[in-house]
Image (cartoon, rainbow, N blue to C red):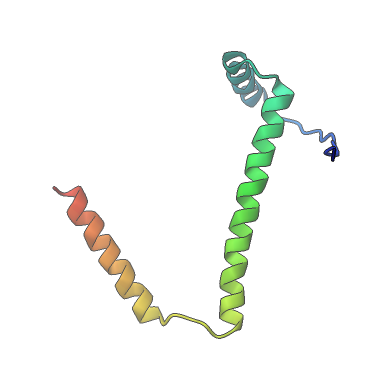
Length: 89
């Protein structure tokens, strides 16, 4: 069986954040350490996904695969118009 290597990370948080942490962990029955580990994992995965998304764009631009500004603006204008129409009904 492949065991995960565990690493301890220490971080300071303010009292308000700690109060919120205690409220959530008491309500959910998790330890503070479990909650923090899960929160850090989710944040790291989210940031890694975002960085990969950005890198895809950079790689595409490096290959010259660009969309003209006018086309992008036209598509955005269409999206905005649809949203406004949806919200005004």
